[in-house]
Image (cartoon, rainbow, N blue to C red; front, top):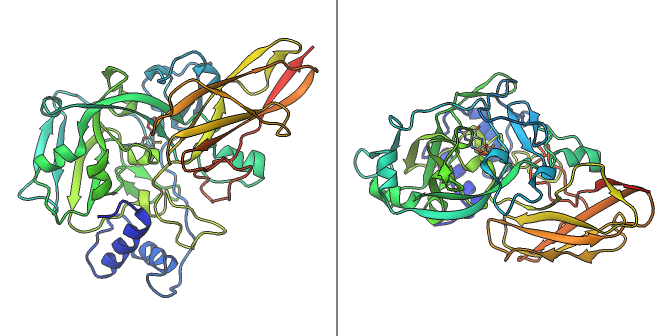
Length: 418
Ligand code: MTE
């Protein structure tokens, strides 16, 4: 079994050509474009890549979104980094960002059922109530959920390249302590067979619509069975409290280290398929398109990238001649954080920040650095992390049209006052 989406995607595509993979809700033309671009078949008259962004403009978020903690962006709410200073390691549920393709549904936990079904199971599958799930052995894991487009706005503001999609700064990420049941356990109980190749959780929120009006159906995205059996959880608790409505109550999927779209909220059913599956969320969306990428896009996105953020508002004031403690956090989907460097002079000199947490996978580390600015005027703060794979945040990120996986060093403006 492979957890490498690139190898697996090629296999999935060849199987689709043989009539052995399903792609509900995706046009034949769209599939042919992917196949051509991936070199699985020869050139066909492929159209544009098409960008799909779903949802009404009404926020549809249940929890309060006070202005000092959130920036509302369409149907989504970005957390303000300035509001995280001093809040502890885990992002409080009240301050956690919300990314909704449509609106938060309010589901009744008592009558909620999870149906596990499909050709990759022995028999008819199984149904679980919340009580059933809670009676299975539980696991707790601290992990970030981060939107693949977090940091997207910096393609425009730092690199002069505008990407489509929500113009997040760095606040589409949060770390929580999630409690739930291993998906592997549930799949085995439902009769998983060795023929299963894809596992596709589907949300109970309203069906999404692409920007061109094309119906996309319910939010769903296939996972290779190897990842589903590895570290994926079905969670019902967030930071010791029942999962809040906006974050997927009563139960969501948590796919550690992967792009946030994999962590399907309000999960209602999981298809376990003996044939490979496609959905708009691993074909037109959540691949890299643009210069330097194949015409049909990269392989579907899996792991998140490397980022750092200061716990400061934009243009934060600092009194000259005083010592201030700059604080921030860094995280990586590829491994643990090894070191963080900070520059207070626009990138000329770098200083090692002090790390305040033992670096752990799927999580962030908090860091700090004392700074005594001398002269009044505008200054630029920078932070760059290096992770355990040896990757250091670069000055710029190669552009992709949908603005995913920005990992460049963010230039944070501040104002030193006399
Ligand atoms: N699941 C459903 N059913 N509907 C959604 O709109 N958004 C996804 C994912 N799961 C989404 C979903 C995206 S793009 C992200 S980044 C995360 O949920 C955000 O999780 P949060 O809102 O709990 O922060």
